Image 1 (spheres, rainbow, N blue to C red):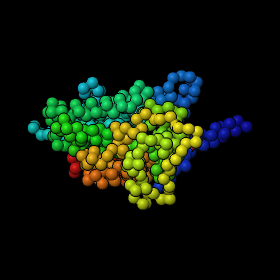
Image 2: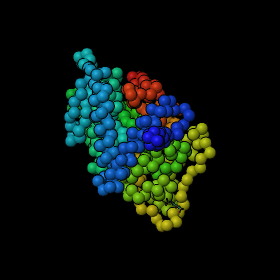
Image 3: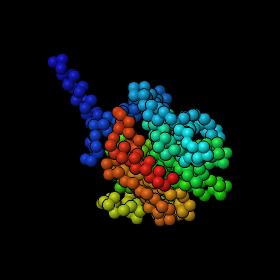
Image 4: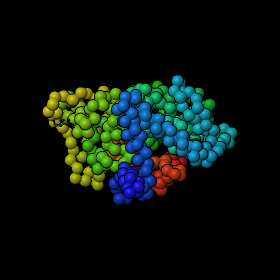
Length: 414
Ligand SMILES: *[C@@H]1O[C@H](CO)[C@@H](O)[C@H](O)[C@H]1NC(C)=O
C-alpha cells in the first residue's frame, strides 16, 4: 500500500519530464532534462506571479542564475580550461562589458577582435553565465582574439531600443582607434557575433555600423547563431513544424518578443495566429511583406506543404499595435537591399529543430541577393540553444561539431 504513492509520484515525474522529441535528436533524455529545468523555471515563476509576488520573468532570471551558480560551483568549469586568458569586467562608454584577452602574443603582433552578444530572449542570461563565459574564453584562446562580451540591460528593467542601444554604444567604443590601439587589435579583423536574441542584436548592430559614414573602422564579419530576426510572421514553416519542440516553444518566443517590444502580453494569442500583422495593418506594405516572404526566400526542401498565413481581417476589430514591430533595429530581416548590400560577410548557423530556423535561412538568402558572401551552416540534428553546450554535464556531440566548425571558419575568414 505504501508503495502506491511512490509509484504514482514516479509516474507523475516521468510524465512531467517526458517530452516527445524529433527522431534524430541525439541524447534525447539529456535534452528533456534541459527542457524540464527551463520549463520548471517558467512554471515556478508563473506560479509566483499568479500569487502576486512580482514579475514573472524576474523569477525565471533568478532561477537561471541560481542554476548557473550551482553549475559553476559543482564543476568549477569557469576558468580551469583556459588559464592564460585574462578576464576583466570594465565599462565601455557607460556600458558594462567583460573583456577576454588572449595569452600575450609576440610584441607588435595585432590580434583579432570579437564583440559577443549573449542570447536569452532579451530577458535572461549574462556575460557571466557559465556557458557564455566559457565560450568567450575559448574564442579568445583559440582565435588569439580580444573578445568583448556585452552586459546590455534587459527586460523587465528596460525594453527595446535600450538593449540595442547599449550594444551599439559598446560596439562604437570597441571600434574606436583608442580602444583598438590599447588592446592591439587589427582593425581589419573584427567580428560581431551573437546567438538567438544576441544574434538579433548582432545583426542589427552590424547593419547600423555598416551604413554609418562616421565609423572609419567597421566589422569585417558577422557570425549569427540561430538569430531571431523578425516578429511579423509567426507561421513560417519552422515556426509551425517546431511549435512544441523544446526548449524554445513558440509561445515562449512570442512572449519574449512582446516583452522586448513592450507589447501588451495579452496579444500573445493574436500573435500566435498572425493577427497582429493582418492586412488591416496599413503600415505593413507589400514591399515589407516581400522581405520575409518565405514562399520565395526558402529553399523548397524547407517549405514542405506549409501555406503562408496572412490574415485578411481580424473580426473583432483592429488588434492593438505592437510597438517597434516594423523597426529594422528590432527586426533586421526588414532592412532594405541597400542596407544589406553594405553588411559584412556572414556565417549563419541554423538548426532543423528550431522555430527560428527560417529567420536565419531567409536572412541568408536576402544577404546573398544583396551581394554579401554568406556561409550558411545548417544542423539537421541541432535544436535551439544547442550551440556552446560543450562542457559536461551539458554536452552534446552536435554542439562540439558546431563550435569546432565555427572556430575553424573564423580562423580562415577573420
Ligand atoms: C484571429 O483572427 C481571426 C479572424 O478574424 C479570428 O477568427 C481568430 O479568433 C483570431 N484569433 C485570436 C486568437 O484572437
